[in-house]
Every structure is written in C-alpha cells, then in structure tokens.
Length: 254
Image 1 (cartoon, helix red, strand yellow):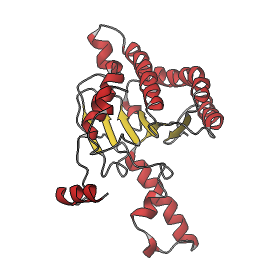
Image 2 (image 1 turned 90 degrees about the vertical axis):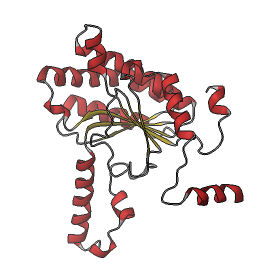
Image 3 (image 1 turned 180 degrees about the vertical axis):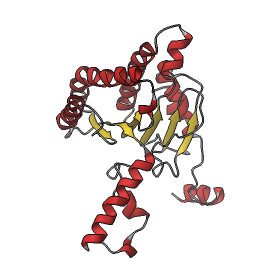
Image 4 (image 1 turned 30 degrees about the vertical axis):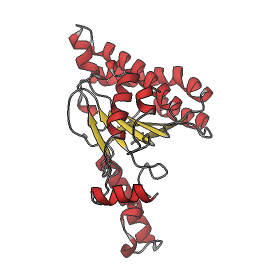
C-alpha cells in the first residue's frame, strides 16, 4: 500500500467492500486493432492484479460484474467465447485463490449456463468455502432487478405458508433475502471505461455506496488505479442522511 494511503486523514478507513463494473475490454482491443476476445483475455489479467491487491490490503469483499443478464444480447460468437473464458479461468485460478485463503462466491442465475460451467462454479465455491481472507464475488448472469425479484418471491412463499406476516416486510427483511445477504453492502463502487451508470448492478445494495467513475479501460486498470479510487473514497464525508456538522461532532467525541 502506498504512503499516500497510509497518511490520509481518517474521514473513512479503507472500504470493507468494493464493487466494480469492469467495462472497456472490447474497446481496449479495438483501439489496438485486435479481436474483442483479446480484450477480454487482457481483462482477466487485470482481475488477477486487483484481486491480489485487495487480498494484501485486507479488503473484506471484492464484487466483480463479470456478465450481466443483459449481456446475452451480444453476438453469439462473443457470448460463446466469454463462456469458454469463464471455464478456462476457473480451471486455472481456483487453486491459486484457495492457496491464498480467498473465498470464491458467485451470484446470479446459473441455470442458463452449460452444465460444465455450472459444475466448475459449484466446485470452486466448495473448494474455497472455508477460507477466511478476501471474499471474491463474481456476478455472472446477474441483474439487480433479478436479485430483488428473487427476494420478493422468497418472501411471498413464506407469507403464503404462514411463516411470515406481510406486516413484517421491511428493508432489513428484504436485504436478508438478497443474494448478498451475508455480506456487507458496498462502500465503494467503481466503473471503468468512462460510462457513468450502474447498469443494473447491485441496485438495492448501492443505496449509500460512494460512486467512482474513471475513463480507464478495464485492461489498463491496475493497482495504482485502484489506489486512486480508494484515495477518493477516503477523503469523502459519508453522511447517511445526517448533516456534515453531526458527522464532525461525532468524530470529535469518539
């Protein structure tokens, strides 16, 4: 970790949970007159570097938006290439994650994936389930609206069976039925590639998350890029509905 991070004023400690939309692989390749597949392969290398940094910096959770429920609309050849890349990356990386005490989690609807990919996902989660370091969450065939819809379905089933009363529904109950129920909500959201939207990623969970947008294309996003995002986060005042004066007074009394 850089000296700049170590000497920052403590408006915020380092984020517990960082969520990233990894945008720009295809444009990175096109700028270099390469096939889009080469951009996605370069993106995997960027993932490796960011995971290593988060593990070293004691970040609790890193969530990466790998494939959205809308990405099926891409050309069939690109989707097929991405599925094969998922499988080969899992085969190559899971043992390394396990050796480094990293827990692998997937969120999203898995039934659309091939049986082979579903099996690799299940195996990777099972192998790393008891690890106590960084939790690496891969959102694949995921959408924030899907996540909330699934939560509402689970709640509806419990109401129908008499396990729950409709009057018990509140924000806490809904959060307990989301795919990230056992994880802290993201503190810092990063989107690379220059776009400035959340694109149906963790819609419920991002309610009070600090947003950081960068024009850097994902394959070029490195450890220094992440440190710059964390520096921005640590210098922000997170008020959660309070006034700035209330936050400052609370800090003084601690």
